[in-house]
Image (tube, rainbow, N blue to C red; front, top):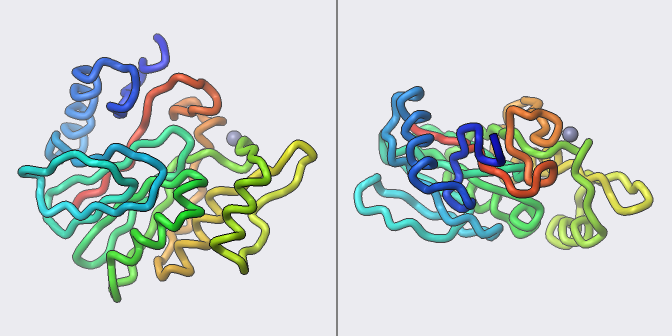
Length: 211
Ligand SMILES: [Zn+2]
């Protein structure tokens, strides 16, 4: 029981790091991928880190990873924020976007790593508009960097209900990605997932990409 009782994969939590490593090994076994997948110290920024291979990778800050190396799993952790997997013909990327990263352009930067090779994009479990209450600053920040945006939000008196996924789909498409038409579960509604807004202190699930 407790906030980390169910396969927490995030090291940036108060959970025992050895347990997190054991959980990552369990996932790796189930997926038949190397256990030491690459992840970052996520900071709600826009840095995209290229991974040449598993050997010698130094963990650093950033919110997206890309690689063209085979059998090199790259992962982002989330608990409401939006994880995005991107797969092109010869490379892959994964990105983590809350509203700050989304507004600052982390998704465009991740798509840009593919050059002319338009990647397919898949949006993972993330907080839905049903539970994503934000203040004016979020709407203003999104408008500032995306002046021609449709309204991905609805005013509800105390602020806005923001549709982070629709905003992300729009941003990804305009950046040149082919976005899979999926309906990701809301992490707040669906208790299979961690939700920072629902639980406060909580673990992290992951989106892992490899080829
Ligand atoms: Zn919800």
